[in-house]
Length: 101
Image (cartoon, rainbow, N blue to C red):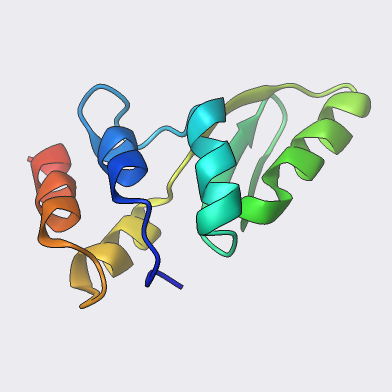
């Protein structure tokens, strides 16, 4: 799952500027390069976790049903897995540690 990391995108998301939140440009990169990465979507009425490849569809469906998207982020458990993975670059692991400091 994490072998083809878009390192610059992950570093941007994990930075203290974004605090783990995924912007629309970031989502496009994750959708293409890491489609199976779980992302947390917080809506006005609920929360949902889905693979990056399905996020846009789920958001569209929820909005069509009258809800709205508040934000999209990388769940803490995914960051935990990344920090332990041997496939994740040291820079990304350090960024996760810095974010939590």
